[in-house]
Length: 387
Image 1 (cartoon, helix red, strand yellow):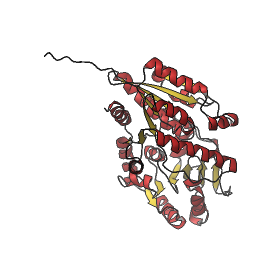
Image 2 (tube, helix red, strand yellow):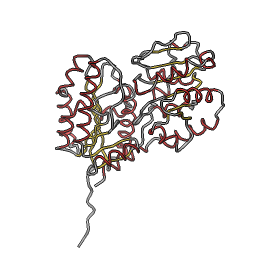
Image 3 (spheres, one colour):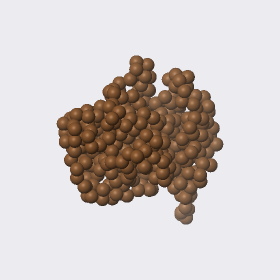
Image 4 (tube, helix red, strand yellow):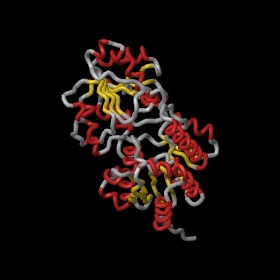
């Protein structure tokens, strides 16, 4: 019998992102740009498209590579109070209609929700019934938070929907080995996949030349960078800094990110940049820092280490499991005991008074290895095309 080579059509994938909130924006952009670029060059394997819900500053549209724009659909949806309330009830019809239209026109096989997308749980459920559906799991437990009652209520609703989405989705992707182990135990009948965490260094960050105006004339400061939340332990860092004269007399503490502090920082020794930090400001802010500190109380997964490694800054992190996943493989950061102010204080003094060339070299090597271009898209394509 004569055998014939039957050419199978490529797997058609729709990437969905409904939030560019805080670090989620760079996270999504890295994956979308990489996968769309690779899929354009390997059309016989995967054809990828993206649907992204953009807020008023058009973060996604501004950061998608020009050559990938024609494969993307952007839905503008203002992040105002009315829309936030509306989302607690159900997804906006414009997003639902756009997704179904793309899936029909492009003959989509796989839908991958990248950004948690808790408030789109009903849409996720629709996709599960029609397509091979993936959900990226960012957090397997709720973060500690200290907010006003209505924000706490909203957060509870979001997490309830989020955990429902995890229960619904048959295929789960996460960027943490600890979370892979947890999800495998919790959902033995689901398909659980590990994908490396993408670098948060976008082109706008790497090419950025703007110094935040609040840091004009400032050098050699201790830096905390990121949206301020209770679980990130900023209060522990401030306590360690403000109760040691050798620290506050010789350095400024820079706390850079939107959010509310649970304490009143001393303006003589602390610079509080309480706003969203534009990508173009990140590079100069890191380059002028003496060290970077991430004193998280808990961290299921985070991209902040990619920033520290890229800029090769002395880095201090708490010994929570996600950070230890990385630090145990390479000396890219010093660690202190989670929640211990004395240990944080002592470790901070030590890192400021040592010239750790080995750490900088390890960070460069680790960045080139762990965050190299192509590894995420190759891993995702293997997952999407698996039988």
